[in-house]
Amino acid sequence: MSITIRDCLNLPSFSFGNVVAGKNGLDKIVSSVSVMEFFSLSDFDVFTPNELIISAFYAIKDDVEKQCEALKELADTGAIALVLFYVGAVIPEIDEKVIYLADKLELPLIELRSENYSIKYSDIITDVMTAIIQDQNASQDFIDTTKKRLEQLPFEVRTMENLLNIISNHYKCNLLLTGASQLYFQSQYRPTYISGDSDFFYEQFHNAPTGYWEKTLMVQDKTVHIYKMDFSYASNIRMTMYASCHNTVLDESILHNMCTCTLFFSTLWGYSLDLSSPETLLSLIFKTETGAANRYLNAAGIPFSHITNLIIVSPGGGDIQELKAHLLALFYDYKKYFLEDIIDNQIVILSAFDLTNSMDAALFEELWRFTDKFDPKATFFMNEGSKDIAALKRTYMDFRKSLPALYKIFQNRRNWDTHDIMLSQEIIALAETENKRTKYLSNLAEILKQDSDDLLTTLGVYMIDCDSKLNLTAQTLFLHRNTVTYRLNKVRQLTNTNFTLMPAAYDFYMALALWRYQKMDG
Image 1 (cartoon, rainbow, N blue to C red):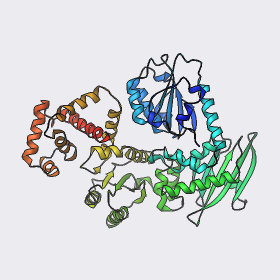
Image 2 (tube, helix red, strand yellow):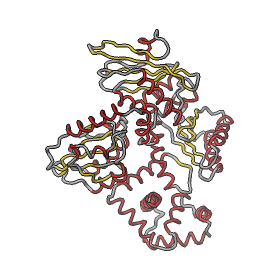
Image 3 (cartoon, rainbow, N blue to C red):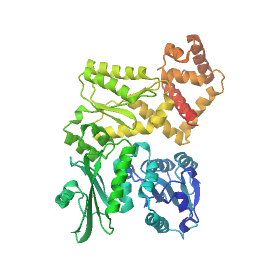
């Protein structure tokens, strides 16, 4: 068993609640409850999975756009539902844009009207947390319930640290997972009374026998329980799980469950726990928080200046190992330094390119052209360069989030860069909010949609896929050049606009991208 949003609706404090949007997300599992009233981008640095949020939107009660931004950021950082208090008093009504976005995000939006002042934040918190604790006490299958929680996480945040966060929240403890290299994954449960780094645990347990061990300490006049369990990864790699807690007590069976869960999901995700191996460096960089990523890079002795460019390649319908072998052979031929790994079913390469350098430019050209010929659905992405690890990780996350939109918008072009990601993000934002700009762009597409000559398709290929090149458009569409010219002239007549000149060209490009995204989405 696990408590879902649907289960919460049957609790006494929810009796006056009304689900106004996001009903497709009612079966998501709840792990914790939090209150948020003041929203800024810095509030969303930490990913907290499976969290129910309580708010009245007081700080943003007069700004619908900020309400939508807050909703998107909540969903991106692990929130699975929002209980909106005092509707009618704080915000007069929930705006249709907010309702539309909550439906799009499948984020249940539960309204509590202002006339129900008898219901307080504490009532919701008490009822939900009591239900969660009772369920945890009754549930015997920790791995199964953890699996259900992890399935709710977006693909790009299914990391070892977020797995440890879920385990840490479940058992109310701090965790540290490490190997012989002393590099580690960590999750801290608040409040904590010890530093919880690897040196602390090593000092406490360096004389302890292999296997399970526990100790009790007095720290700041508080009783703190600390634990360790050794286990094997891939037969011959020794790993150690450390835990510490205050006011809760663990045992050997619980530590065993933690280790089993860690092994199970590392195998399921294809995620190596061999922290000392250079082959796992990329997954460590991209699947941990920024401080840990810098720690891994420094331990490996690799200057960041050697890996400023991120390349992500998908084989389409081809064999990923075969494509990887060919791409790496090119790097060796050019004697170019690189790191590579397969992460999230894609080839990820870090290197440093200066495209004003003829050798770097030639290698880049060969890489993407080989990918393009390898398979019709293969994709190639390279960013323009990152200033630090945080920017590199942000680019990777942005790419993963934008990937569905990239496929929809760039239907006949599979060589992407950072500008394509930024455009995709703009299109996603436009599609999620009904505003003046969205209506204007949709109306442009609607004018052309009513014609029977496939004007939208032709113009989309011409502007988005073929960089406004007439012959390439004709070749891509298997049409005569004169047919394409006829259709483009017809677009000019119907819209009374020269779409090749700025700023009209930008508006038409955005209108076509939005049409493709919404058409494929529908």
